[in-house]
Length: 280
Image (cartoon, one colour):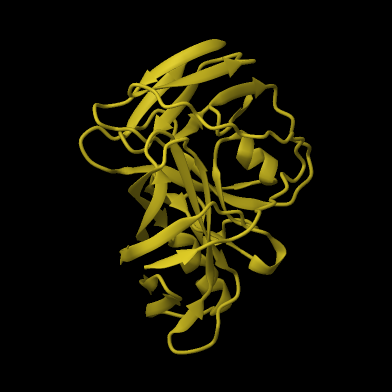
């Protein structure tokens, strides 16, 4: 097993105002978590990815969310917050306000959940790639940024509700990660599942996958990556967590780097596996 550590990630919300917070550990509970909401003008929909359940927060105040029996960790995110900008920090403070983005055009491609669409019995394609005017607009719309540009060939493409790999210039950002141990990874179609070992057992764990926007020339080409990780978990058991990421942004960047490419192509994600895809 290989232990990996990285340093602080700083991503500016372009055209957006923001404030820093100092997260505090979440106290262990009895299979429930407490969301503290403020500033809501309309209901906000949250998604807990481990249990695959959605939760509606209708008003300001404290809202208890009960997790399934024997589920002691969670991964909660905002999937819908109409006509308001909302943040859910690692202490589960849900704060909303009127949209605060400027008109600056510095486009990003981001992956947004499709409103009103959830999967009941099995995974389905619930997200869509869209171009936003700047990072702030994507953030306000609860979309995961995948590219520092317009979507191009990814525009309007639907995909599973998996956090996309963020393809960017890794030399320009710093990446924060609490200690974790990489166990194994498996590439399946357009996604990769990575298994980690971490300390915890009663809180939240948030992983992100970053890939460099420049390929290393070889056959097949190679791509360097980095993993970001933040834990808000006061417990100290050793647990294993699996995270699945969408690799479609890598395919889009490959097509831009090698215009005219067709047929089957591969990218070696150094240390993680090989992503093979078809360009028509």
